[in-house]
Image (cartoon, rainbow, N blue to C red):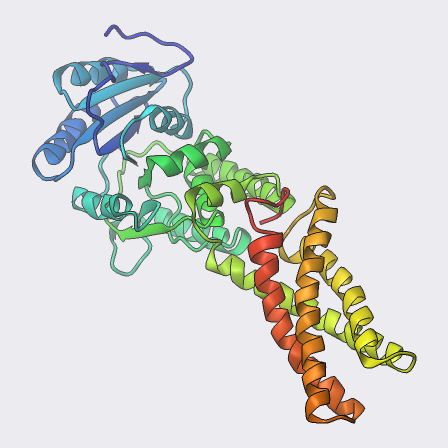
Length: 409
């Protein structure tokens, strides 16, 4: 196919293969006329002889100004498992958006054209995605079992950047920008529309959104030899990454990114750390509402029977508890849906009322004239059980991700 340039990616070969490959390896390139052919031939030999999967190599030309596109087109014409696309605008993230978005493979991967990562890590990278164990997989250069050859400056920059991500965005993956990643195509279809960056921050944004959606990220320690001829502008990239972190952090805090929809479609639970934070916030609000409940109960008890005082105190404290949990624990930040949430929470309240009232009834059977101290102690014990039930019902029914309004992660 003749080389043409449009705003959309242009295939250098016919992509309408009757059988989609299991793996599509995208290699983004920009002005790589010198290294492109030997590296692609080496990768082609590997997938042909050493990889027990059907695989395609997709060269994604990022608006090169040298002979990169001509070489990519020639390779695609010669080698049946090599395809090439050309984009008129530069950007690694833009190239991956285009190539992954158009691919029909089961698993989508990408690697740097210099093949800095030992190709022996490719099968361990892809296998957990094919088995369904994980949703994304990344190579990591920052674990003890990785073997890395690169200068101290790049090593320091990489470690500082990932430590910064851990501190600001609470990430748990170890290496955001290793040029060796893979994702299941169905997960990519969910995440790619949410990723705004088209440059180097693309990797980080994709991983953060995946992690916040509850997707499972598999890490593979790699043998990595840094390319001394790398053209990445470290300072400019660092500034762009800082802007990306600020934008992404604000979007997550404001609840503008619909991560709940990704989690629901992917059928993954919330991340463990997210659940832990919810439990801690719920417990703190629970302590405050329990104190409010006891104050109301003691104040009302002198004017009415214990059952009535318990019901009114529990109702008022439950309304305050629902309002606080709605915003602080489950991150619902819009007023829409509030009435429905409170009505559903009243059903949860009825369950809690039944538990505490039942505890009082059992106490009266065991001790017809209990002391006020024993009454309070019984109610505290009953409320602990009712609190656990409330959390499960609020999280799994009232505020579950597929039914709630926009929320904060």
